[in-house]
Length: 194
Image 1 (spheres, helix red, strand yellow):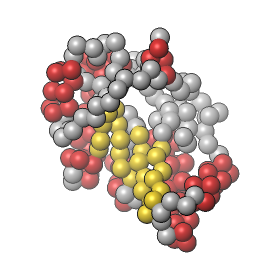
Image 2 (tube, helix red, strand yellow):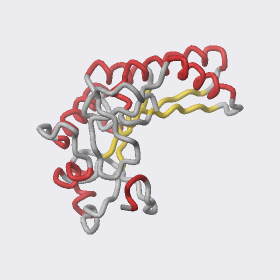
Image 3 (tube, rainbow, N blue to C red):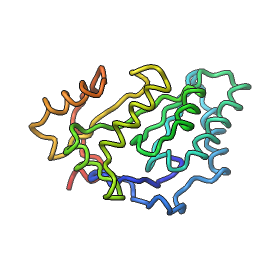
Image 4 (tube, rainbow, N blue to C red):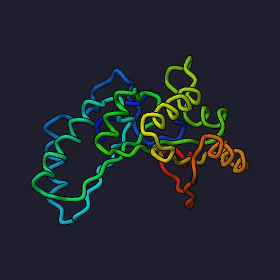
């Protein structure tokens, strides 16, 4: 978790919301070095570092710093190293995507269904912005840069607004070119209990 900052205000998010300008919950480089060192102390030949948050793209410099530190450590440790960034896609730029592609960092996002449902569950803090429209535009941009429709994986979070809309949700995944949808038991994470 390089930062707890996020430009969304998802209705079920358990993370204490920090405005994009609030850097009080950003990881320091000293902490990052200790985390990467600790990760490589484990015995596993496989290491996957997943960036979560907030939205890690709000502190993309730290994401890059961690990737490069882990790659440096791995020159000596010789592990099978991979990365994943979990992001709402709305802040990604072509430069960020090219960096992620170059460093083989998979992209994971969230899609809760058609526009009205997605925007209800995942409103942006800036209410003048259309989350779903930005998501769709940036999804296309990411796929164009990677040259692969499967370079982005998505999962949906169920809210009370999702119930009874399974067909519309699946249809939206198909419309946006996703080839699978992940199903599992419901869990009351975050503010889901409320």
